[in-house]
Image 1: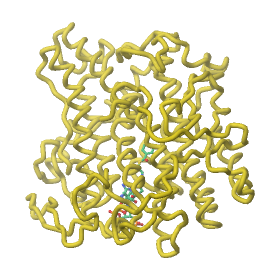
Image 2: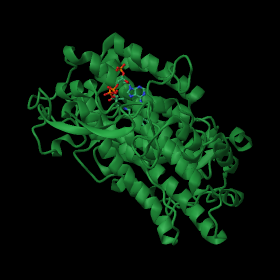
Image 3: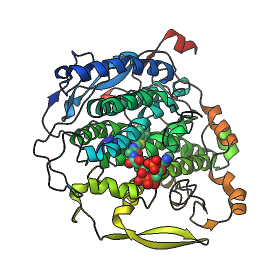
Length: 496
Ligand code: BYC
């Protein structure tokens, strides 16, 4: 967990300053004005993006929102905060500074200069990776579309909308790559990114977790904790890519991403804080009593955690994948912190063990390391996920309560990879269908749990006031007070 994620403050200065040109119709630091063809293509896509934003972006009508906008890449002065109407947010194209001496850090092209163009032999794979990454960004905005109507405070509403506009910008980042480097095919994929929609039966989003509904704010916080964190790790591997424009765009996206996880970490923490306070006050852990007192019982928090963690684990793909081996060897997708790893960065002949289920038992198998790189990344992710859970549990520990939240076993509720098709309990026992059916209601949110949480989700739109199920944050955004007027609703929003 980074400092930014813990504190919500902008990251420390790195690299030289590169100012973004806001006089352009599409703000950018890639000299778009110097490439008229690309500029026209992107200007042709822009109104379609805005139509999509109006149709499937945040539903609650607002006048303006206290948002941060990138003004420069590479220094802590990169963010500017102001009240802006959301549809006038300056979505643009920002790449981290180019290092002219950058060389490829891994795979068969190790040591060669990073690519400024797409090599023909890897075109299809790169197009696929960029499209998959791009597809997740608008998906999450769609998933979170209605949450403004039940925001527990203006502070939280502002954070939701900040996440949404930045996911919109991350879509721009991928669309830039598609249009700048992949010709007609790239332009077609850019169109498709606005045509597939989260949960659409005919034209769903590509990856599973992005078709799940974000039903309420507990799920939103779990999503920004667990699913945005997959984003952090996937972007971390693409930041290592030999294709330099992809590496540079992901590097800058990662800076924005940290705030999203801050929203998740602190959101769940504030829920737990309020619940624990109420458990102590009423001296109970009875679910009905706690719901009656207007807070979310820890048992329900655990179920939501189980769900979001398991669908996010699926986002890493299979533990054994020839795709990932090919991506790595070609130099398209590296490992987390590739350059800090102390090995040959080619991994031929290296092996590792993976766990699989055979005849109702966990057994380990030895596989080539190259094919296990999805697992290598997932292990980093799991270790990071543990940090937040530890932090949340501190609330119970401080209050002298015995209850604890925990990450379920990696095989729990999995649809992708070696655990798919098997039933594993959260504690890590391989179980049969009958036992799964008998207990699944204790492990995953039921309709009734979601309904109980939804019943608590009453909007609170007075500055400085918070819904009863969540504690206020310790500090506001950008050193503003917690009771700052972070969002001005439109007249229609107030009566919505
Ligand atoms: N759902 O060899 P396999 C983010 C497909 S989140 C559906 O096991 P591979 C964000 C797979 O595509 C980060 N399909 O896995 C967060 C493949 O299909 P094809 C998003 C799945 O390829 C919050 C087949 O199954 N970025 O940024 O090694 C808010 C066999 O795949 C799933 C990326 O994911 C699934 N869960 O790895 C906003 C990075 N899993 O090709 C944003 C780009 C696998 O055989 N993507 N499949 O037709 C990748 O690196 C890889 O595509 C994956 C899969 C890691 C997703």
